[in-house]
Amino acid sequence: MSTIRPMHEDDLDRVSEIDAVAFGAWYRQTYGGESGIPPRTQSNVHSCLVKDPGGCFVAEEAGELAGFIFSRTWGSVGWFGTFAVLPEWQGQGIGKRLVAASLGYLRQWSGRVIGLSTMPESPYNLGLYLNLGFRMRHLTLLLRKSLAGAPERSIELPCWSEASPTTQAGWLADLREAWGRIHPGLDYSKEITVTAQSGQGETVILTEGDEAAGMAVVGLTSGRQGLETRYGNTLVLALDPAHTDTGRFRTLLAGAESMVRVRGPQEILVPVNGRHTWALEHLLSWGYRVERAMLRMVLAGTDRGPTVDDYVNLVRWAG
Image (cartoon, rainbow, N blue to C red; front, top):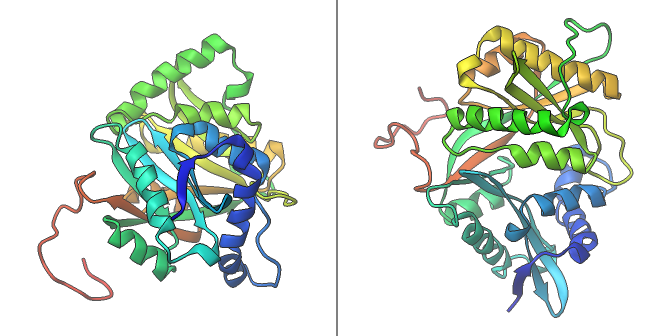
């Protein structure tokens, strides 16, 4: 039987290789061509590890790594991914044991919402996660916008990396209060700090007077070896509910777009879950277009679930 143990920094090169092998077939099917997916960069896998080192695990078979899983916590919200097992070791329960290790870590915070996102076109993934007790929620759409040409609206917002430690500490205190109004205990701090420390991106801050009212963390480097990034990848964009309106949303987004354009990429990606129809409709009206979708799943019993779930209405479209 495989051994599940904590992931160490010495494992990261092999973790990157396993990721490339495990996702190679999906990459070729999705994007075409004969070449596989390039391995993840050292910076990419290292940042995944340092964000939650206690929740990252590997599976060993005869002293060799056969699979891995990363966990991520945002205070009262947690999830796992990326997660992969080498093809020759699939179907032997290794994936389930890796998931169990991650869930053990994520459950350490009582009442935490636990979830994941997966490719909706993968029946294997959907079956695995449904059997492990996860339930489907809304699709998360990845929206893309070209930044080429003259900007519709150019706004410079304060950048995290250019602020003093005192200012950064004040911003984090303000933002923790703001995130808590979105969901009690929600905390995106590590996305800001690790993104800066790893040199993988930048965070822009929307301020109201001397207080931080919103932020956008944007990745600016490719996570794959040998690939140049074509876009700024928005990791988190959040506004204090007390300061949320169309104008502030557009200002924060425009600030992120301006920062990305200055740093080089000429496109930006923004994720939005389908349940957030107000934000989605605004993004579409501002020139964003759907690139692809991921399915959000939540461990049964860790969120409130659907408002109504006691009737049968099985059709392709249902209100």
